[in-house]
Image 1 (cartoon, rainbow, N blue to C red):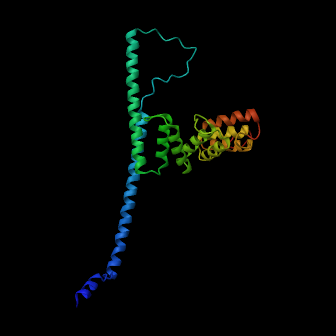
Image 2 (cartoon, helix red, strand yellow; image 1 turned 60 degrees about the vertical axis):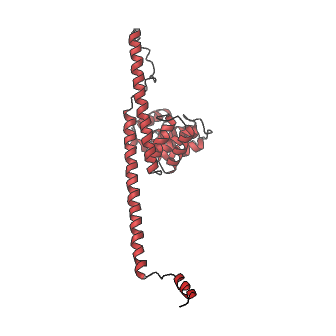
Image 3 (cartoon, rainbow, N blue to C red; image 1 turned 120 degrees about the vertical axis):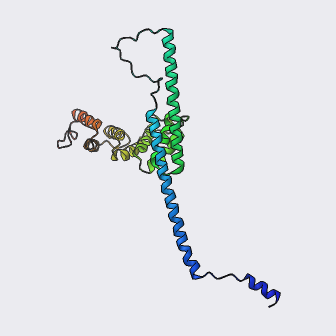
Amino acid sequence: MSAGEEKLAALVPIKTTALTKAGAKPLVARGQADLRIREEKEKEEAVEWLRKGLELQNAAPADPREQGPLNPYTAPPPLLTEELRRSNREMDQEQLKRREDNLREAFRFFESGHELDPVNPELMYWLADSYYQGHGVLKNEENAIALYQRAADMGHAGAQTAIGDAHAQCGFTCLPKDEKEAAKWYRAAAEQGNEEAVCMIVDMYQRGAGVTQDHAEAARLLRNAVARGDETARINLRLAAKRYGSPYDGGGADTP
């Protein structure tokens, strides 16, 4: 064989044998199975980060700077000495520091979980809530709404209520007021049993805000909520029956 023929022979590709082809399939299947196992493990870890974050949030002390409504019938507080006032300030500062530490760590846990499972709507919701409340991170309404919207699109009732609030400008300021859009999201959340959303959409049906006024639909939503054990809906149904009469006082098992 000449040198040229030897060179051409060296360039001829080796034919894949049937055994090689057959062996590739189990390797691909094994790789897909390993990928699924890894994804499930990451989802479980994400849920664990969520649980830890919620535990820290719940354990965070109350904000000492927030005061409840004053009761005019209570006796005035006793006059404190300068030493007691200083001691109270120090305790408030320590309580505030522990609160901020807890919330900051909770936010970090929510972020860690979201990185592992970026399509978990519950993690999106609590990240959004942290941005909205300024818990453990600088308050950022735009970031909050973006995360709420993603979770709402996936059917998360709490996020749907928040998006309704954003469009109704109820606690939010960065979106233009759009009662029709707000009603759409409140209704979606109400159908899932979100108590706040039930109150909001019922009020909108009663006033005809963002929707056509429809007392029958408002009564239906209230009765459904009462059947789920919603005590606020029970009270609202009773009040509506006194104010409007029918269809809120229509009788039957759902009437309080």
